[in-house]
Image 1 (tube, rainbow, N blue to C red):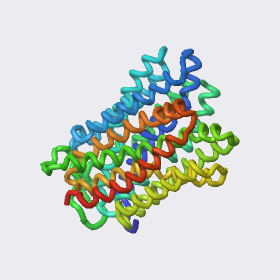
Image 2 (image 1 turned 60 degrees about the horizontal axis):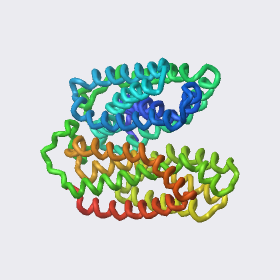
Image 3 (image 1 turned 180 degrees about the vertical axis):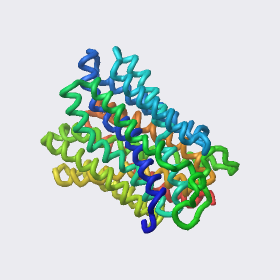
Image 4 (image 1 turned 45 degrees about the vertical axis):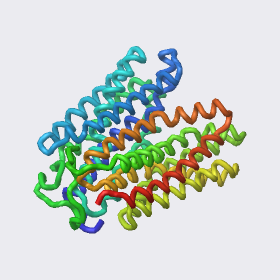
Length: 400
């Protein structure tokens, strides 16, 4: 990253802040509120967890709106409006008197977060960086993991001492703090608006942010890309079930807690490593290697029921977060070309968000039916092998 300075660093800081707000605060710590809200309203955790499902689905819709709303002239105004709605709806959650109100506020929260979410951040980074694009994307995406790791115990303590309503108010304030750099720093959608050039030598043409590219996108290629993205996103649903997996095997609960901790650590570090690998070796090779490692992780958690092996498996499972976030964005850019990025990526992102929204529940239902996580792990192994093969086909057929 030699020569990275000035406005390029400002862009990275701004995008890290935005991702920290829309992912780190909106989705990654949402589970902290489930139990206390359920207890106060006298309802089940399932009803409360629907707030996150609604939020995620609206997040996906917001991503679809991004290419149409984010223009050079509207760049800062859209961020301001989305920040106001995001922080406002988060604060309003603290005033909710019933779960229906929480569903409405969660929908507003998801829509505003999605509009300045992953589609927005990856588009800005692709405009500003011709070099180290994947690494910059991985740093921004990885920041969400850092935020959730740091703020989870803080918010948990606030919820325990002052209640979940105060927890939402604190989250609203932190949201504003995180998004402010994108508003206050002298940056824009493209470096040209800020009077500079993209970082690094120009190797590819500029990314389309309008979603109106005239280049035709192959339907079959899009379907393959959507399937691969869904598979990558579905892999990230399993770590939430590590405590249940350990319990079903009659192992100590501490093993499950350890697995989840190392998995989240691998989530952040794995994104940085993947970004570096993509910049050096290309997306196809990097994602194929990650696919193989995730497959090994599945085998470890499925067949080798020893604490060390399962912990290793959890680390390898953690790499799936990088494949789903950074890998999907880079794969879309490579396979469909930068001209089609603004048109294709929002739709791919919609697929991954829906996969995340239903993935955890599907795993739970499969366990209820079989009283075992083995069917899920076998299905995941088949899926990740299919993912590896689909990657090879897509890169052979990619749009030049």
